[in-house]
Each structure stands twice: as structure tokens, then as C-alpha cells.
Length: 97
Image (tube, rainbow, N blue to C red):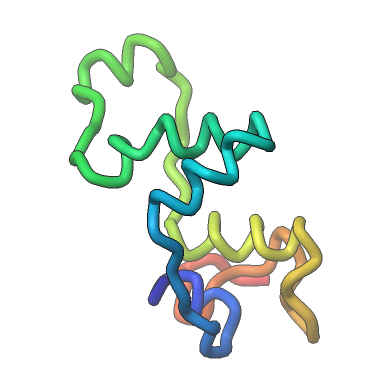
């Protein structure tokens, strides 16, 4: 959440929902049912080995997390103001606009 707040440049409302509520909602909504089925991804650390990652995506170029979050927020129409488009660099980023 801190990274998203930094990318958005403002504090966000925080809230929560118990998992059992998602399970009940999943009885009526297939998408919510699938979100609830992937609960283990929220509760268990996971990752991919570097060698396997490089084999699958040999030309991958990493993006700074703050830049990726800012581009996602912009693409969803959640960033407003100057220098907030999908290609806008993060404050303090080595990238210059």
C-alpha cells in the first residue's frame, strides 16, 4: 500500500474484508469465487528461481516497482495532474522526462 500511495501522491483509504465474506459472495459471482480460491497466494510467500525466469524470459528488462505502479494507476485513470501519464517517471527516478 505504501508503494501505491507514493505512486498516487496521496494517502489512500484502507479497509479490509474477511475471507468468509468473499466465500459467500463467490456463491453468486464466479470471479469472486476464483479470487477466494487463490487465498493461499496472499498467505504464502512464493517466487521463481532466477535461472528459470531467465530461461523463460531471456529479453526481460526490469521496471522499477514505483514506475510500474504509476503506469498501472495512470492506465486505470487513477492519476490526475501534470506528469502522471503512463510514461511519467517516478519522483527521484533516474529516468528524465
